[in-house]
Length: 238
Image (cartoon, rainbow, N blue to C red):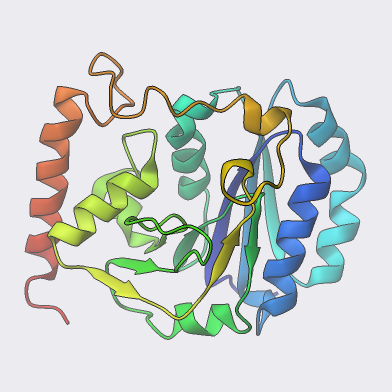
């Protein structure tokens, strides 16, 4: 098996059918699935996912000619989403780490070619979300060296927020022609299930006592440190 170039990190909860639909869109449109590694985390109280990964997953992934790593983790919940992301990122083997959601659909053929053509570049690759006009990179792609440099992907709940603010100030963002559709209930009307209803956006950026919130004073100082470090590392690099 080819050493993976792209590691897909994907926390999921009680959405096995939706998950497969999402992964089908990714793998069917990839130019070379052998260079893709899929890392999935599901909660230790999620019996639906546990049964699926124990009994069905290996047959599915073997047909896709991709590799995978499946992890059962504590239930951190939506407001500690970065705990899943950091764990999966540290277990990734690929040159690139690509964020993905179980309610996302890939629209671009050969999306993997668009990523690997930037091998050697340190910064954010941003894929546009066609049905959500959002200023950040909702599905960021970053080099694996990001973790080696900073120690984790993100110290705050919303890693896309953190990665965008670090890389935008340091002028390390490249937009790539890869389009994603986000089939989330409040955007598209799809997947209005228990998993969606258990998420909460009310506290985002509003709880300075929560160390996982970007409003926390220590995280604000840390953000400045990360920006400075990225600028120093890339000041003489194209």
